Picture (cartoon, rainbow, N blue to C red):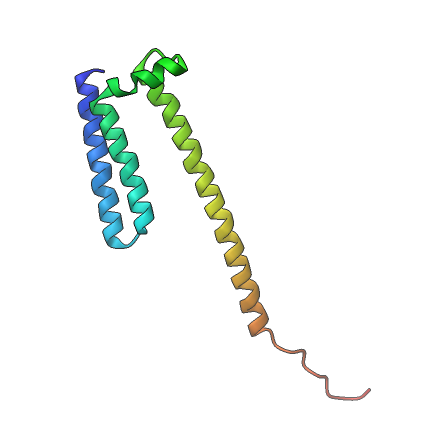
Length: 118
């Protein structure tokens, strides 16, 4: 891998580790999220610094270039993140719907009786 590309990849990974830490300290992430993202960023950093470590996997999958391996791996990670976001969004929609229903039922007024002639 080109040294310049390794430097860019290393800087990107380190910035993302730092941003992950900042968001964790602000309370935006739970501990599990923090650990998951750090595993992803440090794995990325390790592969960028030592690209020969993935050659065995690349040979098994018959991928010749390291960049191709990164692109394919990136698509897989991207698909997993999108799927996770979709599931999380659906759960949130259901919770908001249930909350709105319970709020509406609590605050619903009983029908008023009409006074007057029958």
